[in-house]
Length: 472
Image 1 (cartoon, one colour):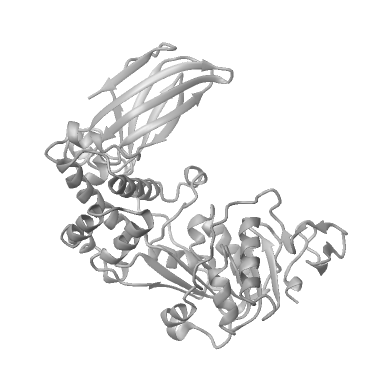
Image 2 (cartoon, one colour; image 1 turned 120 degrees about the vertical axis):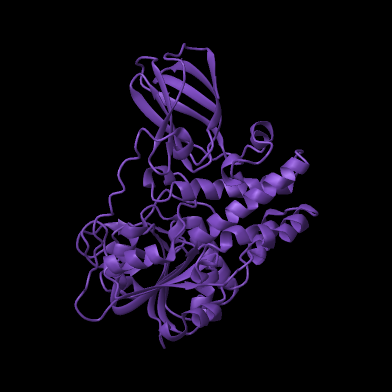
């Protein structure tokens, strides 16, 4: 019975009962919340649901990708982040799981999955338990599962390393885990490609179109996530938090203790046409924008995709991990090589990618019950990656990211396309920052991804309820 794999989150003792009747701890008598036959360890988080369910996950394709790593039997399986149950159906119909615990952070998702499985007549094929779980609740016993699986789930977790450390304990010796997740290098290369194409289209016709705007929104979102990769406090508020580099993920798996961690390309896309074509279809990009983008893509993409290794020319990886059967061998990386601070006497043109930075900010400060609210609205074009605009007011610093779509900016400040489109098109800032009720002395800085900081000339002080414009 899969319930034996659970433990009381309060005292770590065994649970007794059934989800249909009720579940409680056999030692402390704590009762587990059960909703519609689902163990609810994340009470109060209904989450979102996407319906209807599509076709079953290509289970055979996963087996083909894993090839010789795939075992003859998956055994006891924990599915993480089931969504509406596409992989769940494959796991049941594959006849290789002896029992299955299906989890998701959203109760609504699990209810949808149960409903879809019931409609397909798959609820009684193998022992099943459904439970809300976000990867952190201490409800699974050590060595409880033979297999852990999920698709596009690690990219939405807050602390991937923490989850993988937990998963290592949940797996039995000789167990395995597999996940399909987005490749950060491929997304960056195609994001830069799309930015170049969109810059060309906007120069030819600056008018609004749904297709151009939809693609630019996606490029901006990719850029925001990529430039803040690993910044957990910033990423916490985003639904899609992570993309992964294959070699970095492999190293993390070895550090945690997995005997084998392998990044397997899901599908090669040497031109990006297939991937961008599917993206255009999902976004509803209209003709002729779709045809124009796909027609230009091979020539524009070669500039960036040619820089990737053959293994990185894929939008997703199948990450395959195996837990050893003998003593645990953990691998540790030494401290990163010291790159040192950028010399302060270097010319600005070197520090910011060969061209002088340009910016235009509107700052408006007003008093609130909690202190001072400062709206920062505008843009900042630098020919390298900018992580933050840092505003210090009354000695207190606040950071706001540079990523919003601003297709109007290249036309007004960069008509000859001297700045990289990846930076010029996604250069917008619009956020209200909250400060304690202190002084109004002002400092503005540009923080590059390299760690270099460039001061922005600005008035030494702000005045409440007045708008200050800072430009260069």
